[in-house]
Amino acid sequence: MEVLTGTFALWSLFGSAFVSATLAPGGSEAVLAYLVSQTELSPEVLLLTATSGNTLGAVTTWVLGFFTAIKYPAERLAKSRQEKAVASVRRWGLPILLFSWLPVVGDGFCFAAGWLRLPFWRSVLAMAIGKALRYAAVVYAFV
Image 1 (cartoon, rainbow, N blue to C red):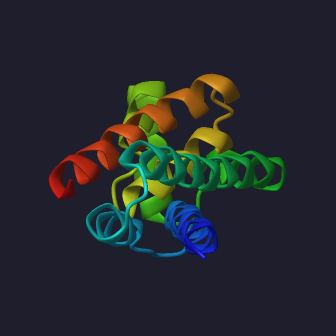
Image 2: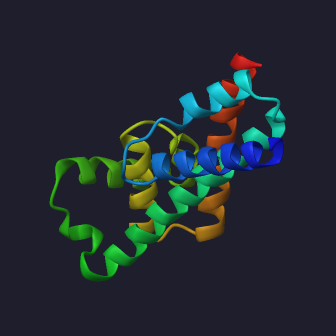
């Protein structure tokens, strides 16, 4: 029964982290904190699971930006929030994706990076590093 509980917990964490990194709101940090403090699952496995789900969600947002640019080039921005995200990514480039975990603006950074066609694998690496560091802080706080 513990394997099923552990498997369910990991998939729940992965799903929560994925949804939190797309354009939908979520609270994967709370799920991670709960699992770290209330289960026997390895903190390292939980960290890897949360980071993987959140990074895959960010990649999804990057891909959405990439394909949106086909119909709506970056020069045809409609909203000031989009303009700010694109301007930030243009100014800072790949390093800004280290902050893709930030609420609200992080999703915009990922979308803008895809829209501006920043290098895919380097974008994934930057997003993963930022997300892993954030989740590592959560794990450390609740171990």
